[in-house]
Image (tube, rainbow, N blue to C red):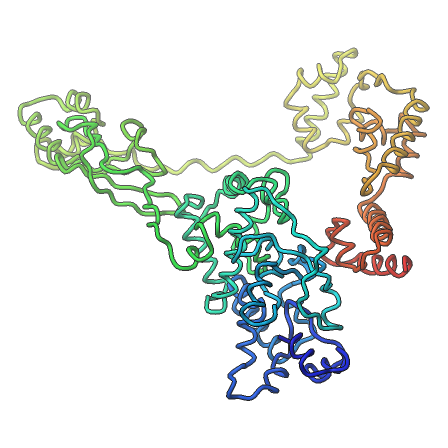
Length: 604
């Protein structure tokens, strides 16, 4: 739209157009322009082209809104309307949009169709989105133009198809998945403005994860299984095109489903939504499947566990009562045929409910009738308890309750008697003196005894002295008889191997490797390198390792220097973020940013 305005108004140069539109000699960037009210103010009110209209139909704000928190969403909307020089920092744009192209792109069939319908083609915003390699309308690969993204705030470039450029062909499987992704991205551009913010999207994620059985009732998510299934669904080659594959899994999934309010790339959200729901439209328009019913004890019916019931171990209990206590399910089972009531806890599968321990709450009317009949007939309570598989105290208590036996027959619990006051602990100094003397007496009685034999001889004294008097124990124990390591005396040989290993690590091609003790040991073929290379048995080798082993910061600085040199050789635009990203620097406090800036200045 701005390109056509620049051409038709006959502006002598881009600076003149920028001054009339934005009030500055530089224009706005492509993805998140701000101060849109300046443009809307120059358009008659009758046309109804407001700032919000431009934001909805001409920017990528609709794509971002479902994945931004409400506060961030309102901040971004205000920045786009009224202006904010730090608009990209509101959503952390420089961090998440890592797959930006260097040029504007277009679809050859869209150009042809636009020319036939409008007389000239125009840039489609969906073609500029990261991850969109195929036109969602025609299903053909998109083409890179000669217009560079870095020049968009300094000039205006109408869409002029270039015959020299051509689209990258894809195999049919990859092409179909790219088309699905592009269709979802276009749907979000068209409908995202009317969707709710991330708080609602996160609730939808929760519902879909439960429907697909990746999240249980307690909210625990099987992140590893979800990542493996996503990799199997999309394939490694497809995910690598989106920088969404890492060591056989997809680590970005956990960041999305952990209810983290920080912004994540919409590209990753689209991949996850299509996997869960089939498409972004289906994801937002509602769950078409019912949430799985919480059945920690399997599907009904459930077995009766009353041994004297005619339906013992048969599935006759249709309904159970379930309550949650500290994330643990507790269920109450009641048999409708005998009234037997029992409890179980935990997630007990159906096949394991026919055995195992249960907590009996009530025996039921069948049990009471038979026990009462046997007691009236004069049967011994002990025999009844044995035949009915219950405690004799239960039978006696029931007999007393029904008046069939005198109260004194009830077997009560023993009265509580408080324990005797604990003995006072012996004095620490007295204990230490006692164990020291025992230790010295054992050594005096066995002059040739070894340390191990002495520990076995008086293990109690050894244990107490180790815990409370270790220094005295070490100085008053027999000399250690451990064998001298076989590698002692080979200092010069180890030094030569270590020097060669350090040289190999330092001169290895590609991004610099860290010169650590473990890396030196692996390259030099030294087992247990930390014990050997830092021991006092190899003084020359130890000194060389101490002088050449790198700290984390030293290694990071060496990687930064290498990345800057590589970018300078390729003629790329060097920025602090690009250097930090290419060197894989984890520096949350940004302590190395000044060093990176110095390296960039020196390279220029």
